[in-house]
Length: 423
Image (cartoon, rainbow, N blue to C red; front, side, top):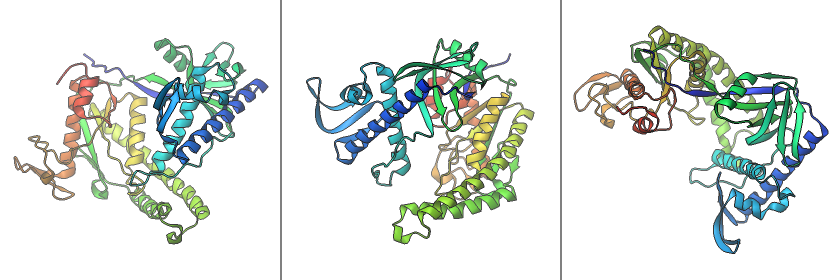
């Protein structure tokens, strides 16, 4: 009997050739102007110390402020919007106004997360919402008429309906809305491309009923770049080796932004050009990574296996050893082709003995060697880790956890939260 673990993945529905009516453009520019006004108010509060912190739900103040006769040190976004109603110029469209403020707050948080120093501090952002890039609808404020080929936007100026010339995945969007009993959706109007993009849920259609588990361990060692639990090893191609080395050298210069200006080897304008070159290098790696990912998919399909993905990460400081491009390509291929897969947390997979289950940092004393201090089991550390990763996938499958990415969770938490039965 086929065990079909129902799940969904996210794809984009796209509408192009948007009819930019006068009403549409007026509503868009008014919205962007309001958001920049909110941005200036919040950044000013952060700069003078009035605002202590912002998050997706609340604004936190350094000292108590009066709100509706009460002294408060925090306000929800809806409450905070009430204090700045003058910015919106209307008492209507409160949910839309709250969504606009939430988008501004997320922009600030995104900047702070990207530029946070090691001590947790961050300089005051100097950012603005550009009027030539995008108009973002975080919540469901757009409706589509498939027969008339029109989109209707809820805006600060009221509803605005515009035509579109063509679309991609419109049928899937309508099916997703019906499945969730919704009539409206959110998304992003891309101004330069004059198109609207909406994220939709697409059902995962399973290709086969798996009978085995294929895990792999990702490594920086070129000769043992990808090691599977079935003994197969994929070495890093010479072309990727050369590209990753070059990326690592470029990263050294790009990371000088954290140094005083006097100690930098390159000015900001030159570093900007270098970043374009850096993106080009990553694009080449990404192209090669897709071929590797397809090869890995073939191994899983031929073995009729659940493909269990290692969630190892790198970072700009460490450069890349291909994992940051192979992993996304693998997940996308699995979703599109219906290959059963899990992305699992990699905690302790290198320290756990695949024979007895004992976890100890002393089990792995070198990069390549593993020897369990409890049972004495010894083998190549990467092969041992791959078997542990496959073991996690087996646990999730037996608990009937839907296929998908669970990298940010603990294994037992995944089973308890998402599993249909305990294991």
